[in-house]
Image 1 (cartoon, rainbow, N blue to C red):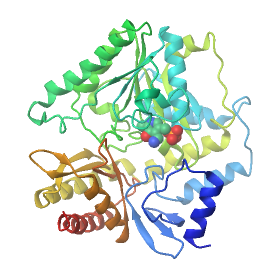
Image 2 (image 1 turned 180 degrees about the vertical axis):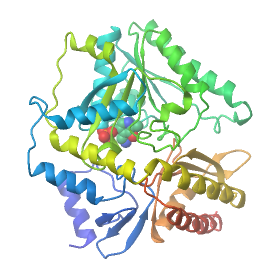
Image 3 (image 1 turned 60 degrees about the horizontal axis):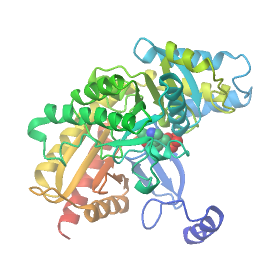
Image 4 (image 1 turned 135 degrees about the horizontal axis):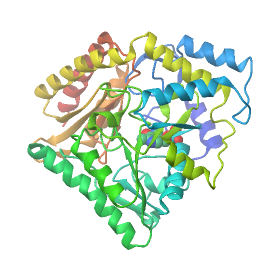
Amino acid sequence: MNSADLMRRRERALGPAYRLFYGTPLHVARGSGVWLYDVDGRRYLDCYNNVAVVGHAHPAVVEAMARQAGRLNTHTRYLHEGIVDYAERLAGLLPDGLDVCMFTCTGTEANDLALRMARAVTGHAGAVTLTDAYHGHSAAVYPLSTEDCPDRERPPWVAVAPAPDEYRAGARDRRDAFAAERGAAVGEAAAGLAAGGHGAALFLCDTAFSSNGVLTPPPAYLQTAFREIRRAGGLAVADEVQAGLWRLGDGAWGFEASDVAPDIVTLGKPLGAGYPLAALVTRRDIAEEFAREHHYFNTFGGSPVAAAVGSAVLDVIEREGVPQNVQRTGRHLADGLNRLRQRHPLIGDVRGRGLFFGIELVRDRSTRQPAPRAAERVRDRLRENGVLLGTTGSHGNVLKIRPPLVFERRHADRLLETLDEGLAWAESRT
Ligand code: PMP
């Protein structure tokens, strides 16, 4: 079937709410490692897909999934070793005290459960989220996804604090003070909720600040924000759906770099490397308080197959030295991106660490005027040249680089060369 016919069928079958990447969408047929292949057999270097954390179709993950599916797949109302082993391993990767794991199928569900839990434990109803955040699509969580949810649909129990975007705020020369100010803004948002009669049950924060354009505030940000939300009687919740499992290089979790311990951590995307596996991890006292009045069951969450896949992903990460690769390749890529910044006036800012970068494109470095058209052009040009990346940020002018964590130096070099050409091409057209 050709792509145009498939698009028409898809539109009829799925309706108009869905979106495809690219003006001419990529019609994919298979994936392997860091490569995606289209229906014509052309291969693309995947610099975007974080779900395929150990590479597309990793044989050890596929084998574990198939083996368990061929043996047993029930749910958590039966006793089975798989999910207990996996929960213990996951808790072992988190700071002491965060040792109760509850399983869901999606990041949305994990955040939804975090909201229910925080409400039950604090007795408050409200939530503090950031500008341009994304935390999921359920009726309860969608209003916290300020990137998508229209302002007029925001219920009064949601308060929005400004994201710690030091570049846009022109605060690069006073990073720590700015981070503390933006952290304090979480307290101000919580006070607004209290004044409205809701109180703050939680502050939910994507520790990679992915939809904000990949921000890297100094530790003062989370330290201040977590202190403020606790002072307001709420819980500090780290959404590690993007940052989790060594994406940021310096540890398994995004919050580690800030030397803070959240009350609840939510996990998703990379855990199952494509199999729907997500989780919430919290302290025993919080889990016990929640369980006084609430039971929890999720038909597919934490099934034997989910557990087998999750364990296989952790095995591959250990066996293949993925954390070391993220640091090594990440440093090489960061150096290369910073060199591109020196050569290309279109680049206003390069941010990120590990294997997660945002490259903010501007029309003018001194005014920082966003260049979303150029970002789109560069992204499309790279696709033509066999490299896939995305765009993000409130202005859509940030190129997002977030490859599988088995991305190697030679792949980074290929990305850098193609990006160099793409930027020059876009610059010649502005
Ligand atoms: N939190 C963050 C930070 C995310 O990026 C996403 C997904 N983009 C979610 C939560 C929701 O996860 P899911 O799509 O699995 O529901």
